[in-house]
Length: 99
Image (cartoon, rainbow, N blue to C red):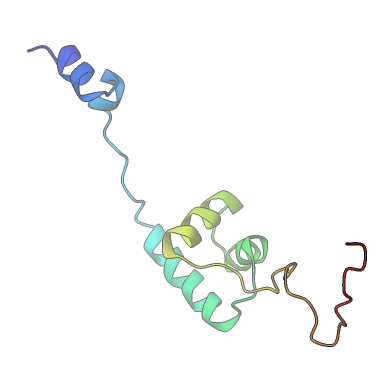
């Protein structure tokens, strides 16, 4: 059976059949270690500030790489989230009078 027919039956394109991933860069584990250390010190730093920390340390990175590595590690900045559906405890609830 031809490769084109096999890919058609599997629901793949032939380009994805021949594609070989590039793999991880040898620099990424070191960057991930630095990001983890910085996150442990300051968990409220976001992508931009983490990128600035790595740039100040002399590493040539951009925000897209830092975003990908932080997502890969499962890290996210800590900040106050909106609590839109939770009312204040001191707020009086008025009855609906137009029934």
